[in-house]
Length: 70
Image (cartoon, rainbow, N blue to C red):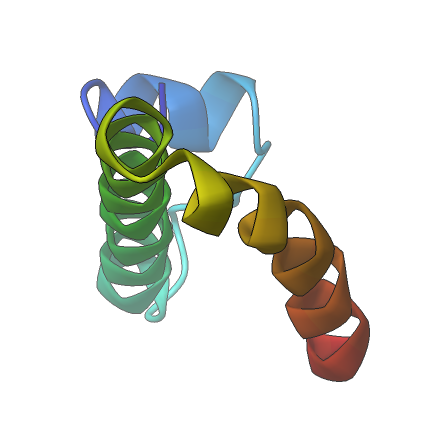
């Protein structure tokens, strides 16, 4: 949602206040995170189809990366 219908999801799902001077920055970040999620999803699907052992390793890597990021 936050990649395809950016303004709608910013107002109704993320409940961002787009009346401030930072509205364009908020929309840019929302879109950037959305497109990166889309890219990650496509890559994981391709790994699952073409490199199944790597897909199993990614099941451990993904939570580890999120933990480091947190």
